[in-house]
Picture 1 (cartoon, rainbow, N blue to C red):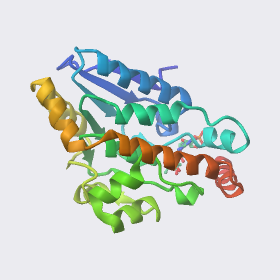
Picture 2 (cartoon, helix red, strand yellow; picture 1 turned 90 degrees about the horizontal axis):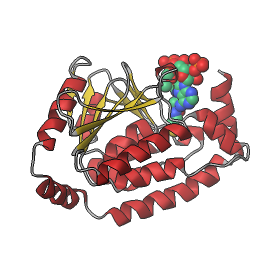
Picture 3 (cartoon, rainbow, N blue to C red; picture 1 turned 120 degrees about the horizontal axis):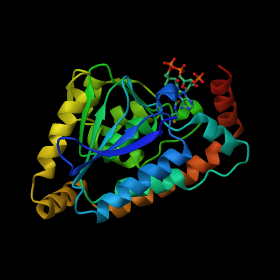
Amino acid sequence: MSDPIVIERSAEDPAVQIIRFNRPEKKNAFTRDMYRTMTDALNAANSDAGIRVTVFFGTEGSFSAGNDIGDFLAAAMGGSVGLELIDFLYALVNAEKPLVSGVDGLAIGIGTTLNLHCDLTIASDRSQFRTPFVDLALVPEAGSSLIAPRIMGHQRAFAMLAAGEAFTAEDARQAGLIWKVTSPEEVEKQALAAAAKLAAKPPEALKIARDLVRGPREEVIARIDEEARHFTARLRSDEARAAFEAFMRR
Ligand code: COA
């Protein structure tokens, strides 16, 4: 069986690290192991001068269907939530080098909110961004309740994060969630080209520019922690268990 997360370097530019979600049979839903592998790759990039940019890709038609609902159900049944998801979120916030994503198709839950931590996202015109947190009796995560209203305003952030409305790629571009929309065939090419351009820039100046544009990490971390307290409590609620069971039974 192939690895559900593949870490590689761009063939065109070895300074570009690629984190590829590779569990297409489950629409690239993230398991705890997958988070762990991604966290290690993000943290490694911080201390490896040979890596200047990290790029996230999924597979054809699926960026990610979000957290594995089977893992949510296990936690709802009294199992451990584990630290893998929160460690991954911290690693995203603490990334010291640019993050680029290339989205083709489904981007659900953290498949959407991950892009709030990316600096440049290119999505195919068939992509769909959706965060059905409340429908699953959960609450927004990944600092999205702080970052999304800032970039897209209250109403669009509410429509996405609380009402669970689907955003097309064009909606997401207009909302400032992503940078560009292109064809499915072009997504990876354009994302890698954007990453290679960043990788060629003076890294120290780029790091300072990025930090200035992103703003303080502490407030994002504090919001992630606040969201996580609610998220963990909701995960163990009867209404969440019922929603996970309904999905697993389909
Ligand atoms: N967790 C676990 N398994 C998932 C999953 C998830 N988040 N998303 C999809 N899968 C699995 C399905 O159970 C199915 O597995 P099976 O073939 O063993 O039955 C497989 O991936 C394919 O999904 P399927 O639902 O058949 O494909 P689809 O194209 O009809 O629908 C989705 C795709 C993503 C719209 C649908 O699977 C879905 O709504 N998934 C849940 C998304 C979600 O709520 N994520 C959590 C956000 S917080």
